[in-house]
Length: 127
Length: 328
Image (tube, each protein chain N blue to C red):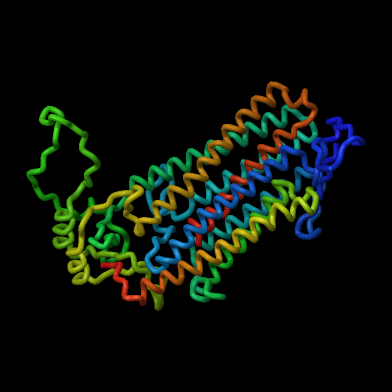
């Protein structure tokens, strides 16, 4: 069969002996990330909620980055994009990333504007 | 697939039969579908972000809404959702193992791993149904003001939520149920809240240790990020704006806060739950096909790989829903 599996993750830092053990390895990694997310979500350390970077709380940055990390490993190892041709991989990954980044940028910017109108524009909505 | 025979010499790249990008037709089409479906979910989540940014200072705090675990009483923020996330990741793993076993043509292993995947999916869908039921039922009850804002009640000492049941005063009223025998054109009476606004107002007046908590999130200082609790005098004053008693959630109003919150909860988790459900159904079909030996006769288990892609996608979407609906 022509099923070549690339068996290393973390840019070759960790190389597994078989595809099965790679799957379990990725599972452990994803579980750890989820556990960290939940722990942070429950404790909400003041240091992370109090400080922000580019207008967003550090805690939320951490959540979003960890989510993207999880998404990467699900797509690359579970959906075996790692084993596909790079042209297919790029077509699948960059198309939605471009469109979603665009959509999110417009919508959040607009929402923030609407927020300021509600707040400062003499519109009474909380009566 | 090596095992499928193609007469490659007479074909050009786009003439069919060939495999552009080294992926078969079916697999490529599955990816087309997944990319478009990903955009649909992104649309939902972006719309959620829009509404949330619009009402950034009054949006409900997810930690305070999803605090239930089946069979246990108490306050367990996020635990159950974390469990659901883990179940879905776990069933994703059994799915990859099924695909892997398929590549090695191990029929029994594929059957078992598919079976475990289906079980995982069923647990997840069941959990989501339970979560919906709990969300719709609500637990404390709240008041809606004339302006459509939600007022919740807390204990003065602990600032913990107080249910309407605990303080509302029963006032005898002349209200009687309309029954079929009295009606010419009879409709069943719709849902009526357990208490009237007057009963809640009287209860608030009678209990000195109950305060009102508004939707507004404190923006700075010691209690940043928490909801505003009014003083006793301000609570009694605010109660004059009360218009409705709200218990639980529906598509119009909910006791948790902003109306859009429940709408997005139903639409996003509902759309995702529908995907999981259809994924389970497709998995069951493939499961039986594997048992019947369809793919063994075909010589390859690519079909398992294709439903596997769909199943992982469902997991992938949940990772984002978990973050943006429950965590952030």
